[in-house]
Structures are given as structure tokens and as C-alpha cells.
Length: 183
Image (cartoon, rainbow, N blue to C red; front, side, top):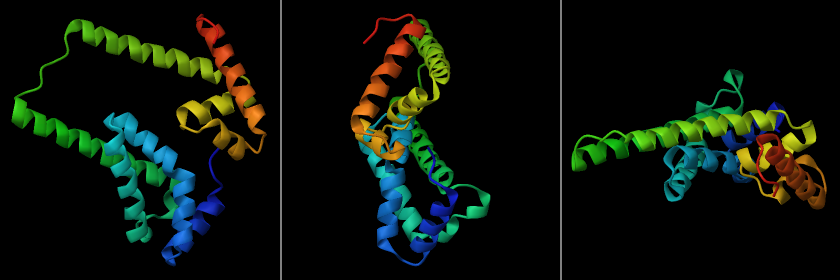
């Protein structure tokens, strides 16, 4: 679930005013998203940590760069994180080319693996969309937004045991719909 826009605007105003606790709240709300996005792009947890830190430092140092009229704070922070991560990957690629020479293309069997993995990801994402609302919600929070079952419970306002049960049931239903073994 995305935080209400009103809270985003209030947090933004507080950061503009120099309120360090607002930055902490902002971090608590969006750190998992920013870090997860950076990890997916860079495939490097250490680099992703650095990028996440840079995103929040940038917001702290220049909060007026964000315009609430142009979109959500979540989307703006994610865009910055994505750009930084892509810049890092491109920079690393340029560095490797200068050190190792031009990139060698994937062998056909590696390319096939890449295509199969992408196809599988599409199948899984489609299967997630067919889950009943409560199960889909916990699976998306846990697996697409990187939340722990405790964070899922907190965000949804449900008991931890209920969050665990829904995640287990959601995974079981996904396995059934994908034709795999049940966990």
C-alpha cells in the first residue's frame, strides 16, 4: 500500500523546515523500496546501500527539488534511486570496457537462460495478480517490496500470525497455479 499523499506533503514540508525526525520517518517508509530497487538494478547490495544513502542525503540537502504537484514522493525517490543505479551500472560497464576491452556477447545457452528466466518472471507476476486480494497484498509486500512478515503485519494493521499465514497460503496457491510442488 502506498502512503497517503497528504502524509508525503507533510513530511516534505517538515524536511524543508529542517526537521530531522521527518527524514527518519521518510527513511523508515521508503528505505526498503529504494534499497530493493537499487539491488535489482546493480545486483550489488553494498552499492545499493550507498545509492540508498545518496538518495536520502540528496533529499535532505535539496528538498525543494521535489515538486508534490508532479507526483508522489515515493515515485520521485524511486526515480532518483533508479537513475543513480543505472548510472552506476553504466559507469561500471565503461570501466570494464576500458580495462577488459569490448563486451563479449552472451553465449546462446546463456541467452536462452536469460529469456527463460524473464518468461518465468512474467508467469509468476501473472499468477500473483490472480490471487485473492488479501493474499496478493501480502505477497506483493513481502516479495516485491522486500518487507518482512512483521513489516507486512504493521503496514496492513493485522496480527503477525495472520501475515505469516496469508504469506504461506499465498505461496501455496502460487505453487499450485504454476504447477509446482507445494511448499
